[in-house]
Length: 71
Image 1 (cartoon, rainbow, N blue to C red):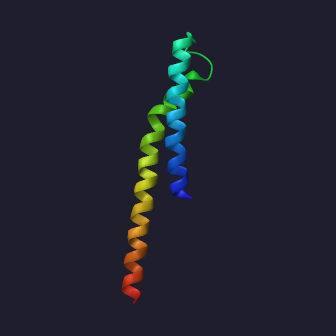
Image 2: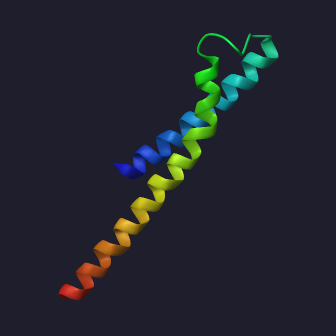
Image 3: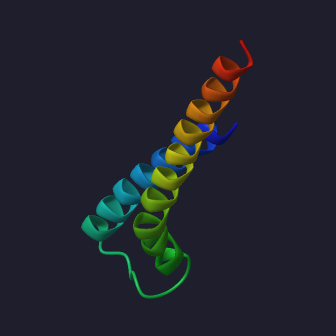
């Protein structure tokens, strides 16, 4: 579930990036409406995705370590 969330955050960030590129090209006002939130998402989502993915990796290593000690 955490890995899926990480992938979802990366996809959301990419979609927001392309939305900003398209809207800027179309001449949209990026300082009003939902655009500030879309802009913030591009900056916040990738670090959160990296943290979530690192958590998945750490949890996997801990689980394997405990499983090997039990044998």
